[in-house]
Amino acid sequence: MRRITNISVKVVFVLAFLLPVKIFYAQVSDAQVKAMFIYNFLKYIEWPIESSTGNIKICVIGAEDIAGELEVLAAKKKFNNRSIDVTEFNNKDRFHIIVLANNKQDYLNTISKLEHLKNTLIITNEWKSVGKSAAINFLRIDQKVRFDLNITAAKAAQLHISDQLTSLAHSVQQ
Image (cartoon, rainbow, N blue to C red):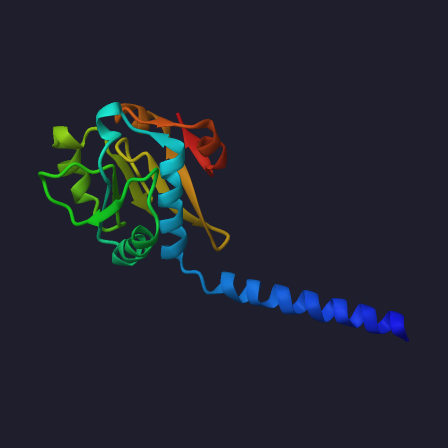
């Protein structure tokens, strides 16, 4: 009888622990996951030396949900003692990262023509055809957020992507 009680207590404990974890993950939105990906990309990408000082500047165009989640992260976290600024696009500012929603493809032309944005990581959000300029594209596979890497675009922007990040990508275009 004591053995059954011990097993029952263990089962209740495991269920009490795992159930909230499962509920937590069910409540995480795609925007939260993408914001965390973007923050973590900072750990695995090296920018040219002129971009290695000052605040990290991230611009999100047309994906307000992702921008909102990045702002929440930026209020809580820094990266290598550097603040993270989430701002709107303008033609004069430099950005480390620009995230483009799937209906904002026209911005890619503008961005590619601006010399001061040549070292910018371009991330697209679930685009069918990324083209040559975007180094990362988010996509959904089996109800999960994944990303593809375009190494050619990263090299053109003079960005170095670590092998660790490359190994995590759904697919890698050389």
